Picture (cartoon, rainbow, N blue to C red):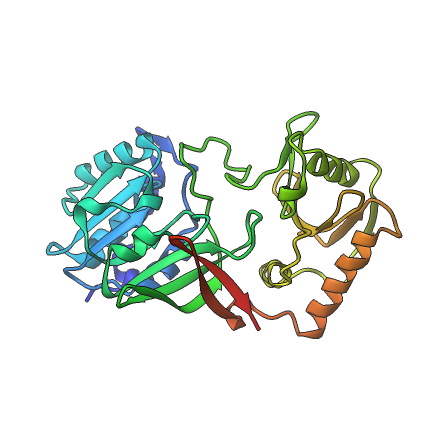
Length: 335
């Protein structure tokens, strides 16, 4: 059996991510994380594997090594440019057991079922029924799933399908780009659940879990974002932020006023907003609020106090549960 480490020794990562003809591919994940997910996937020689999110093609090349000449890999991407280039690069390296298709992976890929293993490098809004239906009994799915209805609140779940039902075996820190129905150009903006976006004078966005209460002009979302951007009260959070732990804890509060925002490029913020108040804490530990006595700031401080009191739990320490929602499953964490 070939290990992921052994496969990585034979696959030239930069040949895929920085190909001399295609150029640099921004649609790629940290190779260390790719290796982790594929180790969790537990791929054996001769297996039939599908991946959602072709990206540069690097992960597909690793899977090719893991399944060996008697196995097969199906790689799907919503972006035809990525799928076609990956296919060409595989062909050039003599890889013959990987097929790349431009397709919406959230619908699965019925042409090559059933699958022994399935891995996703993009985040669906829910665990799709099609994924579960297309697995063999005892098959394993490794995929990022949301734990709240705002962007970037995800964990990577290892799911075992038994008798047609998915069971979460474990969760780990992590997440990937949201799955979208068309190719995504702006990788800095979430692909789903953005309730208001500003592009001038600089890029910023906000996602409010209470979007169902907002009006058609998105007045609540616009106003909340403005409160955090203009003349906001700021204060430092002296204890520092363990972001994976904090965002998981915030998601499990189950508060419909939960809010995620990007006030500056490459800086996420999590907090609480209403139609009249707003408060968030950024990844650098800066707290912003509409006022020093903001009710939302009081809520946020309470969440942070509770988080500290329970010892900043790691995502892997939560109890995962899949809740049936129509034809799909919603992932929820509890302690």
